[in-house]
Length: 171
Image (tube, rainbow, N blue to C red; front, side):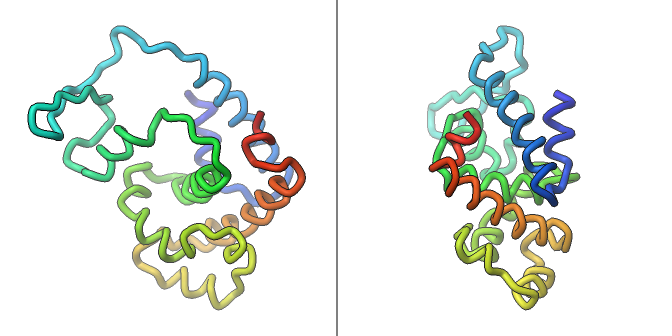
């Protein structure tokens, strides 16, 4: 859907844009929760375990174990925890202009580089930490995306403080 692609390709840099994007995400979330499976959707059968015949969407790269794991265990499953939503917000910001598979391939490096997505640490990142992140070849080294992730972390934390949880804010 163009609206979702457009949302995911932006780097969130201010509260107003953040609010606009969250409104779009809320609408997308509501639509996702009401979507019924399509009978004719192209699905690939692939055996990951001995004798198991898992149905997977065509977009899932069967040569990439991280992508298969993501498809089978994370994608399309509701997770309302603040930790998960925060992690996805940060990773989605870095995904702008890139494929999600690219981010998944670097996810372990992101977790280490971004202190396991500890929001209290990230909101306090200084210029030295930003420079270290810019030197880290295991992540996306885009200064605007790094700075946006710090700013978005502060906004996310203020929303959680105001609403009790980010999920409550989305609903």
